Image 1 (cartoon, helix red, strand yellow):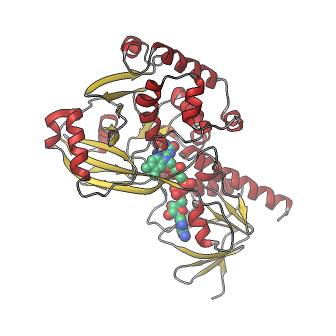
Image 2 (cartoon, rainbow, N blue to C red; image 1 turned 90 degrees about the vertical axis):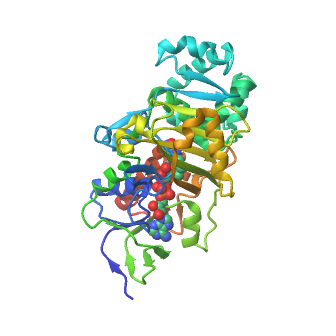
Image 3 (cartoon, helix red, strand yellow; image 1 turned 180 degrees about the vertical axis):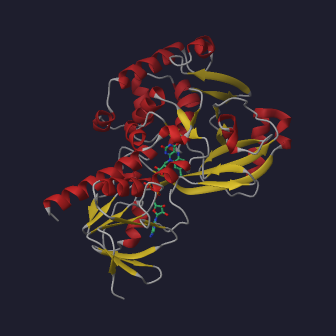
Length: 418
Ligand SMILES: Cc1cc2nc3c(=O)[nH]c(=O)nc-3n(C[C@H](O)[C@H](O)[C@H](O)COP(=O)(O)OP(=O)(O)OC[C@H]3O[C@@H](n4cnc5c(N)ncnc54)[C@H](O)[C@@H]3O)c2cc1C
């Protein structure tokens, strides 16, 4: 079959990196064909409507201090709903509150006297907050790279603060609680959390890619389109159809890229996985927009939140949506009963009235980013590569990677260099 050449650049993958890359190229007058194997754009940021509930595929939040994403997105149109800056921590059957006292000054007493961390820990949080306020995201990426655990110890935090707060809070962000993730990623997320809020779009996380995809000219995005083979200028779809272009971008994680480029030796990164259970509840167990964490190291549950406490659109009228995240992949037969029994310790008998809606097992959730992790090549065999693996494993990182790739292509097109 002779390849048809319709657009100047073909991008494979309509996750956030592919969408950001496409928009940057189109803004600069380059025509783009975006190919996506799934039924809709968004990649790892998708939301399903089930019985009137909005179920994000895995609990995730948009940090409204993200600088690049904030410029690209119309945040007002997303109608972001914020979590309270802090957390409720369940530890040994007790409930403690740890708030960001700079943003919730009235919580200074509850937070200062909470047994999570000593007074020195609380002063160190303030020190870290101020030191990162004066560091740009770019500067953070150049800093010495340690594991987050070593970094926190060197910063002076007590073992209790590390074990009962950081392991749990950052465990939910990094999807691992050994805190082996890069300290650059820790500093980046800590800065974002203290400079803004963790939020959810009122109609679910998928509103983010939906908003970006809506800006694409008609005919740019083809969903349900699996690319099965590529070379420098040509792609073959699973249907046998061939398309060609001047440049190709693989906006997919490196294991998916390796499958399409078997002759190249791309860095394959490890994945972190998470299991997320959703329950319909007659009443919210939290009754406020806050994340609840487990402070017990042997607990199965990492965090609980009630998205419908932030936005009523997450649940049908008169019901609440409870989201429960558990690190790793779980499909053992008694998994759900173990989760429910732990939830009962946290919230008592009301849990018996909860109805299980769905469990998502997300194997490829976040790429491992330890100090030893090398990002994949930005170009291989003449093909451009982008994804969150090239920057930080986050919405912001995926958008930056897509935009940077577009800028490289624009440079190549303007200089004519290969
Ligand atoms: C459970 C979970 C929690 C998270 N929590 C947060 C959070 O709280 N805050 C935050 O900022 N980030 C969070 N993230 C990370 C964030 O969602 C990702 O970093 C980002 O979405 C990655 O975008 P991407 O474009 O790099 O990759 P992807 O989203 O993986 O996009 C790749 C796309 O390529 C497509 N594709 C692959 N192969 C082919 C092929 N052969 N043909 C056609 N299409 C193909 C895929 O279908 C996919 O749509 C979380 C992610 C998960 C899963």
